[in-house]
Amino acid sequence: MPLSPSTQQPLAGQTALVTGGSRGLGLLVADQLAARGCTVTIAARDAGELASAQQKLLRRRPGVTVHTAVCDVRDQEAVHAMFRTAHDTCGGPDIVVANAGIIQVAPVEAIGAKEFRDAMDTMYMGAVHTCLEALPYLKESRRGGRLAVISSVGGLLGVPHLLPYAGAKAAIGVVAEGLHAEFAASGVSVTAVYPGLMRTGSHLQAEFGGSRSQEFGWFSALAGAPLVSMNAERAAERIVRAVVRRRTRLVLTPLARAADLAHGLAPAVTTRLNGVLARMLPQVAPGRPRLRRGAETDPPQGAVSSRFQAWGSALNERAADAYNQRKR
Image 1 (cartoon, rainbow, N blue to C red):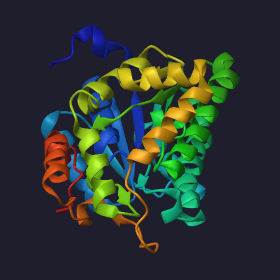
Image 2: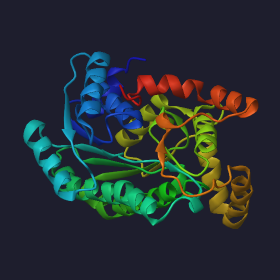
Image 3: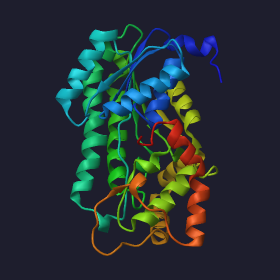
Image 4: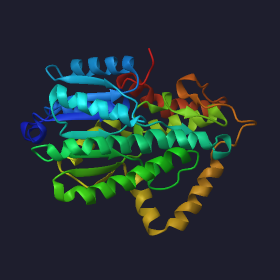
């Protein structure tokens, strides 16, 4: 849907940088920023994915300016250099979205401390590096800088079989809300974003352990189920709208808002209900096989489970192609 001039005006002429911008939600947020007249830099580790994402954006939004930056957000020096190059190339940035992340789906008995470190290095320290390097530029923005930090519903409560992910997302959500308080007087706004399940095709890039095919089955089905998950383009539009309005906090999807409310009002009950959910999830497979990406994982076997997975992930499969999730 075309954006009206009044919708475009607040960000027109500004520069934006999105980490994890080569696919999925990051790519869609970059698209929404470009649609509002921003010059956009998308950053990610994979140069090939970035080039593909840049072409998608240019085809979708003729006339926009999109730059790419190969950067591993786990490396603060690389993040520092990325911001310096972006500033020298196109000024700013006036808007930064810290979105880079990984998803590991497995029972805790099937993983170890390494998986927790990997999640914290990418999603917590990666976002911390991004925020720390972004803030000096955002403070210099003539229109008042805007920072968005993408957490997750997993950061609002401990989701079984997603504990490394949930722990890292909880940590960065706290940092985002604290930064909002500390920098409010400087004119820089910080928006903490807590999305629920979205149809981004992320099941192909997520990593699965334990009973891998069963874990892949439930995750891809729920992430694509229309009544449970959210259209990713709509989610990206709402995130950018929250950034424009300088909102402090945004929780996306009715299920995520319900989980947030339930955990706030009755945390012990919510935790016990999570225990019921955990018993419904796949049991630990013998041994501790390495995590494997969804694109390399066999679908679940059996008539019922395979039909459920195929039904739930149908929309997610289409999203994978549209949002640059599928390796070529």
